[in-house]
Length: 68
Image (cartoon, rainbow, N blue to C red):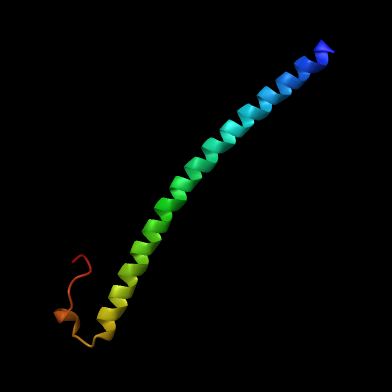
């Protein structure tokens, strides 16, 4: 009986270690996804502003530079 308990304890320890490792991976990925979402939103905003500037009918020389 004690061998069975020992094996179960070892299996539980392995499972807990795996869960902790997976939690670290998921947490890291969540941070990366959040960063990428912010970058995509910024790029979409810049693209929309550039499109609005082009549609405004102003000559290119009168449009504000994209870095402003």
